[in-house]
Length: 163
Image (cartoon, rainbow, N blue to C red; front, top):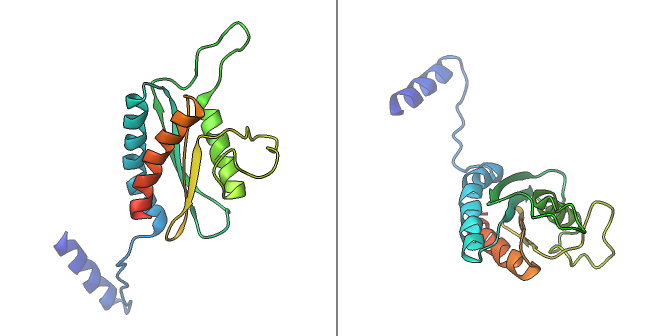
């Protein structure tokens, strides 16, 4: 690797280009590297609580939601069991609805301080935190709200260590 870097520097110098050395990773790249660890922590916590569902983590760079990077993982099953009265729930859709609500309000899901908008469910289970370079989101759907919050907290703690 050192030989390739040295050759690149020599080649850039030969063509009058001054190489720039990137000493710091962009926050989105850090998120990509940390997201899998956060999701693994969420999976572990959900398994400890004996619940299945969908875990989502996301990173919004800056102070205003214009875009995000996100990753998800299914823990056991993406849907719950249908009953006589219900066709069941798409737990991934609910987790992303929680994340979307937080991206719009910059508050934990279910705590928007207003009625849910169309597409939001207003349910608790997602957490958001201002990090060093943007907002960190962790959401889980599959258990009771109290359990979903515990799973989300596990993921948010991992993200907050690095972002």
